[in-house]
Length: 430
Image (cartoon, rainbow, N blue to C red):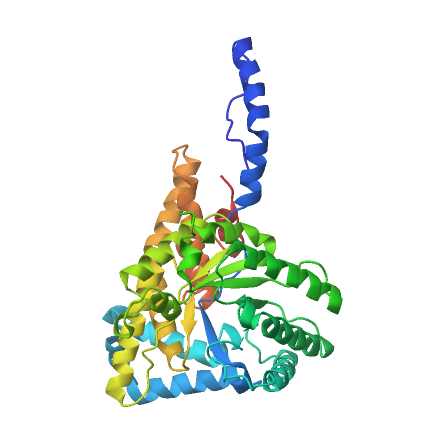
């Protein structure tokens, strides 16, 4: 991190020079702690969604199947740009462009991040647990086959059960069996992550760090290979018994292994006693929890994901369109609040996920490019603007490029920066 000095101490009174040295020494530990705890945003691509699939239902072509089902839903319920725009709540001037790009995405990379679920979405375990043992091994074989065939999404992983006492051994056993089978058939897939649900304390995060250490030792993986995300589904994670934000302790307890925090819509709402009818992503209680999580994770490199909508696009065309309209609204709302990822539970939700996401970036690309070009010109002319402006604008454009919403040639022409330049601007430290 730059120390921010623009002038040397030469020419200052001796006592002031001495104060500079003393203050540097006084704050050295705090400077080091700040750099260590808040290294800045994590570099590289963040997926725009995570698709949760019961582990026992996964097969190597699942991603392609989801894409085909989503395209069929568009054909059946929103075959024209006008119908598509109305269903997804898009302005008329971008509806056709968004639809074309969504269809292309559903054909080339329908699922960006896939989580094989051994928790709430998974079938009940058999009494002796052997059913989950078998499913863990089979799911690992299928993921290895998908990775070898090139059909696996760019980001994958599994969600185990929680580390609470009743499910602790089951969680550890499933992760161990899965990884053992997966690694026996090939390398750890790039972008692989473990998901730990229902976290209630920083001690559980530290336990997950320890588990990753031991799994790497057991299977001969390089140190730091295994990373995990936690799910914010419990009130205890937002506010601890001492009145502190437990999530902040968790974020820092995870170190470099913790890469994400995912909000759990329904478990969290239920734990607060909110009636089922009102458990939704835009409930004020959800907004409060996400705001606390967002502040706790800011600057740490831990990425955030919003939760899911259980209003699924199924049934009659009218029902599908109503679900798409609601899902699109919620996705846009999350994007506007700085949550660039969310959960999807049904293939047809991919259509509204990408429609809302692409619409968000397409609606903002012109302003972002123009502002970034103006920033570069003002910097060259000696006019001072906040570097945070450039970081935020560059990050916006890179996210749009990563997910397929924006075309690189258009961005370069309009703002004068290619991916390398945008990455340098986004990753610059203050």
